[in-house]
Length: 110
Figure (cartoon, rainbow, N blue to C red):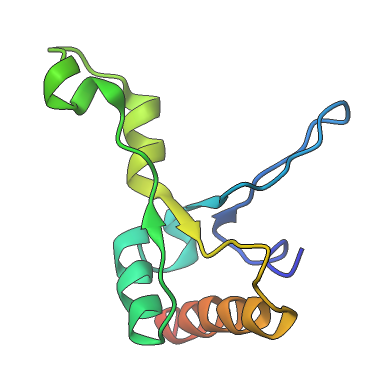
């Protein structure tokens, strides 16, 4: 909820009949955010915040490689980032991650 108003981030959604358990907190970093997903990951790492890219599209992995394009999967993989998630994350740690993301956006959009 702390990231819901950040321009350029697409957050996980919940259908009215489905409860998301947020096993991993994943979001998409759109061009309007001001920096791309990989630059965001690098800057977060410099602030001590680990993150992961989304899963690779299966059609790009060597055992399953296809000579076919799946543009939606490829775009989601390019933009997707997974933030720290744990039952042990404190409110203070969550706010630190959110503040780091928001600060980076403000700096990069100047």
